[in-house]
Length: 271
Image 1: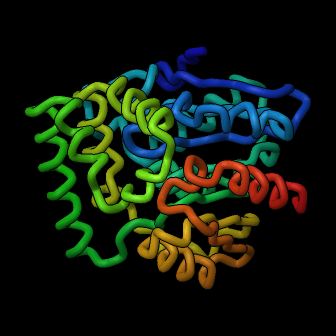
Image 2: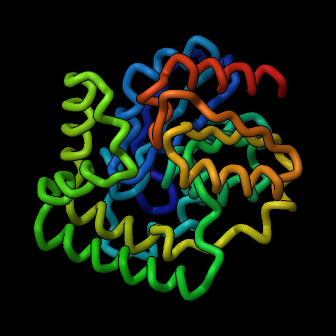
């Protein structure tokens, strides 16, 4: 389904019954709603699952202006989609992975959501100089994506140390993930990186103590960088719990799906 909100079309996948508690899923960079795979059906046993394609990904629009991909616009689009679906404030739980986790954290400050689940996510980059260096790096990578094309970029992306633990996935899972990444376009990925990359987004570290929602932080034990980030966030967030999943790296939901679902369901049962 594609919904027109705020002048763009956002594609969504839904599972489960409308009478169940809404769970909104935001994918990572190069991902899509369909990229959650069989997890959508597993979560639908407990939730009304709504997975969005963020702008520049999947079947959603690819605006020409990088600013249209910004955190502010992401938040407005997510809430507008939910309103079109008849989901009111304080009903839905928001779950974001990696890039989607950064967007989810920013969006949670809107006050529209009941709770927040962050998988392998960060509040951005606190140091202004480091943030500017990352912005320049993201911009250069965006130019490279447009210059060399999606296939070359995906070849580079899949070999980042961050995703090394995905080598333990079955060949079928790895191929499905590879094809899903290839389904994106160079234009969409590049502008998303320019508009909502880690170097562009506002740093949220100082605002974390103001977020009074219940928060579940999920990281894989093999992802040392994001375990350290989650540990810091847990101390700053007033109502946060943190679970480290054994045998998983950055992509917990793919590498340990059964435990991922169990942790999400158990957390939501306490709300």
